[in-house]
Image (tube, rainbow over all chains, first blue to last red; front, side, top):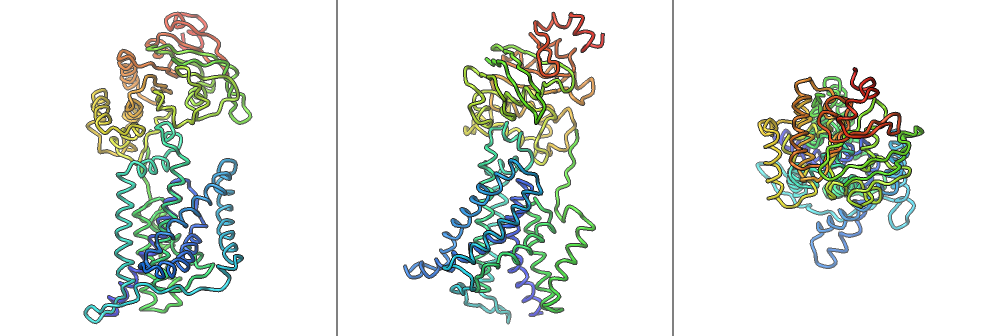
Length: 297
Length: 234
C-alpha cells in the first residue's frame, strides 16, 4: 500500500512537471500549428537562470524560490525573441515544413549557445536544492518539493484554463487559434497575441524548471531535450491544441513512468510511455481530448 | 463614406483587380455583382486590409485604409461579414458575439449591443450557449452578421451572405439586410445572387475579371439586357 501511494505521488509530481511543459507545446501549436521544438530548451534557460539567481537572492536574504520570477521573465523574453527573430519571418515566406525545420534549428541554437558561453556550459551545474525537507504521512515520506510541485501546477493549470475562457486576451488567443483573418476583422492584433502565447508558454517552462531542479538538482545544456520529448508526447497523447488534454497527458505519462519504475523496471519506463501513445493514437488519432468539433457549412 | 480609386491587387501572380473605382455614400446600400472569380471577394479583402493593394487608394471618411493596420479598421467604424461566415466554431454563440465587440471596453455598451443584436436575431438568443460550429448554415450567417454589428458600425461589408443557403433562408437574410439598411447602416454587398442583390440595393457595380464593366442605379441595371442575360438568367 505504501509503495502504491509512493508511486502515485511520484507519478503526480513528475506528471505535473510534464503537464506544465506540455501546456507550452499545446498553446503554441494551437495558435500557429507549429511544434515548437525549442520549447524544451526554454526549461534549460530557466534552469540556468535559477542556478545563477537562487544564490543571488539568498545572499540578499530573500527566499530562494523567488528566483522563479527572473526565470519566468528571462524565459518569456527568450520565447518572444525566438518567435520574433526566427518563426515569424519564416512563417511569412515559408511553409509548415520550413517552420518545423526552423524550430528544430532553434533548439540546437539554444543548446549550442549554452554550451559555448563559458559562464553557462558545457559542464553540468548543481543548483541549490530548494524545498528539500520531507514530511511523513502514515509511513509515506513526501518531500516539500513534491507537495509544492503538485499544488502549484494544479493552481497554474486551473488559472490558465480560466484565463483562456474568461480573460479578454485569453479569448483573443482562442480566436487566433481558430481563424486568423476573422480575428483581424474583430480588431485582434494577431501577431501580438502570438507573442503573448509564446511568453506564457515559456514562462510556464520556467516554473517547470524550478519544480524539476528542486527534485533533480542538476542543470545541463541538453536537459530540455529529454524533458521536452516527454512533454511533447504528453501533449500529443492528450490531444495537441487542447489545454485540458496537455494536463491530462502530462499526468498520465508521469504516472505511467512512475508505475513502470516502481513495479516493472526503470529501463522499461520509456517503452510503456510510447506503447500507451501508440495505443491511444490508434484508438483516438486526435488524442484523448483532441478537438473533433465538426463545422457545418 | 467609402471611396476607392484605381485599385490594383495582385493575388500571387494573378492581376486580380485591374484598377477599379467605386464609391459608397452615407446610408447607401451598394452591391457588387459578378461571376465567380471576377474579384468581388478580393475587393472586400483589400478594403479590410486582409490583402495588400499594389496601387490605388481606399478612403473611409478620408482615412486611407492602406496606411492603418488591418486590425484597427473596425475601430474606424467599418465591419466585415466574411465569405463563408468564418464564425469561431469552438466558441459559443454568445462568445462569438462578444468577440465582435473585442475593441470595446465599456461592458454596459457591450451588453446593450448584445441585446440589440439578439433583437435582430432572436434565434441566436435561443442558441446562445451552443457552439457556433454546431449551428446550421443560415444560423452561422446570422451569427457572422450579428458579430459584425457588435461595434455599432457605420458601414458593413457583406460577402456572399446568401451562399449555400436554401431559398427560404436567402429571403430571410435579405430581409435582414434591408432591415439593417433601413436602420441607417451603410452596406457594401457582394453577391452572386444578382437578382436578390439588385432588388434590395440603391446602386450596383458589375465586376468582370478584375474591372468594373457597368455601374448605375440597381433598378436600371436590373432592366439592362446585358445584365439580364449574363447575371439574371433571363
